[in-house]
Image 1: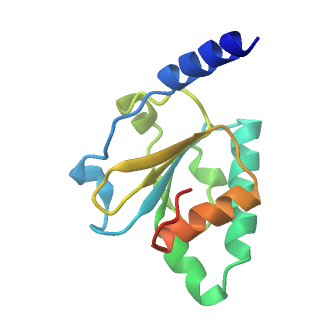
Image 2: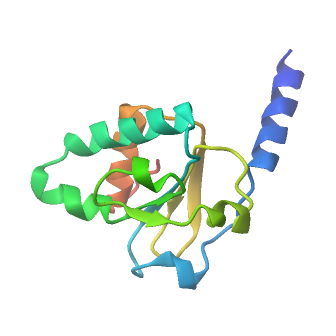
Amino acid sequence: MGVLFGHRNAVAWQRAGGPARIPDAWRGAPSEPAAWVFVRPGCRHCGDHLQALERAVQTRPESLRAGILARIRIVGAAAERPGGSLALPDSLRRVFDVRIAPTTWWITGDGVIRSAWRGARGAAAWNRGLEFLAAQPGVTP
């Protein structure tokens, strides 16, 4: 059973796609970490993922929320994105060969994709991710 699960997991990661780093032209402000969230319109799991993000943002001091949201890019389903986050075209899913939605990339200030989530996460996971966006040393989403 474990070997079969491991094989399925490896295949899923391979199919998830994505580069090792974001090209400078798409990165945004240099030296700031960012999260790119790839979603599909009408995807229930994507909607749950974005709602958990909104709940996590609401736990932050109001003075920090706009800065946090400015570091989050939503690729696809712009109508469902949290206010203050940046919308990127759905075509980037194809450009970067992202095949699983939702997929979230955690990107360092120099454009390296530090880690990736495949699938929806809850508010607790998003809280760890928001610490990464706040540039907390040693925090990995």
